Amino acid sequence: MRKFDTKVQHLKYKVLREVARFSWEGTLTENLPNIPKIIVPGKTPTMRCCIYKEQAIVNERVKLAMGGNKNNKNVIEVIDIACDECPMGGFEVTDACRGCLAHRCEDACKKGAITIDSNQKAHIDKSKCVECGQCAKVCPYSAIINHKRPCESACKVKAISMDDNKAAKINDEKCIACGACVYQCPWGAINDKSYILDVIDIIKNSNNNQNYKVYAVIAPSVASQFVYAKLGQVIKGIKKLGFYDVVEAALGADVVALEEAKELVEKGFLTSSCCPAFVSYVKKQFPDLAQYISHNLSPMATISKILKEKDPTAKVIFIGPCTAKKMEFKSEEVSPYVDSVVTFEELQALFDSKGIDITTLEEENINSASYYGRIFGRSCGLSEAVAEGIKEHGIDGFDLKAVPCDGIDACRVALLKASKRVLDGNFIEGMACVGGCAGGAGCLTHGDVNRLKIDKYGKMADFNAITDAVNSIDKK
Image (cartoon, rainbow, N blue to C red):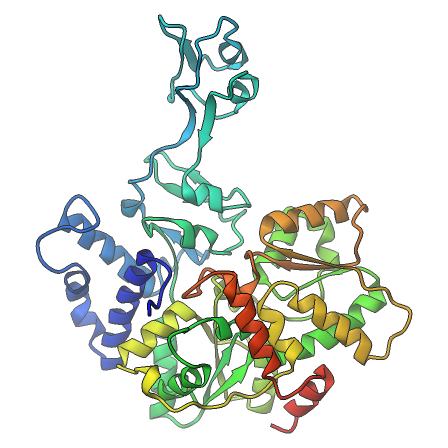
């Protein structure tokens, strides 16, 4: 069974695996020149014009696997040399142009970018076109269309443009680190930085120095991943990597659900705080609504804080589907509690870098959250949990009108209505990824079936009531 959706993911994984393998061995520096040859062996190019370019791009992937550009605070980076195979795109005249007499396109263009040939057909001069789209709007045959690059189409916050060299450029002021461009780029030219080396160092140092233990906090969307193995085998594999214990982020979700339910009733209107990309989007695009973001930390940060309160020497690594978590854990509010973040893609690389075949392992149980904490991994899960939280608080007379939004397009609509005071709802559950966390850029696999797997995982929980799961934390 395939471990990844795309070959681009598999290429990224191979680089991460080799970087991790040499790091475990303590020979990374001396083996850096060998990695491109391991990834692109032989003399025949398979992806690019020549093997030398392929290896040069692998070198850039290695840099990202080692943490990327330290001067760039954004976790999403562009590999310029890899970003040259997409057509430039923009507005183009198609064969549907009938060479009409009106030539409204020519009149609408204020830059003189449109000319008419001897057959009365329109042509666009790309050097003059500013892509305003006026020509396309007035064409009676819809003969002028706008071709966007995959990364531009994927980016719903319009943070991607093209630089002077025709490579993708990211506007960090707009970017919310959701990773949609990373997953959609067909050439793997946009990637998220990896902190996999930091994680390996933390684990290795814990083995050499028993002054601290390393905890893995794993996202509930793990239930939809590693489909070739059983969840209990994944948990066992994480421990074999050197983690002291594996704790569900869903336990943090249970705590958040109860607190968020109470906060919603007190304030009357609230937007969720669980998805860091959504929170960033609200702050950047709808600053007037930022005051309504729940004061609660995310489930990741909440359970990590609890772990460090129980053991101040603990190191906590979050494992999940989200590239935006790599921005969140460096924030002032969260950095005291979370030491690093890796995605499910990177976890697979860690397993294989140490030769751990999780399918051969015995299953191991994980600390159990409630059903509601576990369904945070998919769209509508948080809303259901808040409704349950209101019920368990014994609050009567409050009419919850949840507006679950999966994907930035849906979030934008809800936030626009809220900003104009016309939203028929009092709680916006915002998730940047379509489908919720199970659609995150750092997932191994994506698809509608992920929701069913998360629901099944929720039904396996030891606790039906959120309060019971939260009370159990103090007993662990």
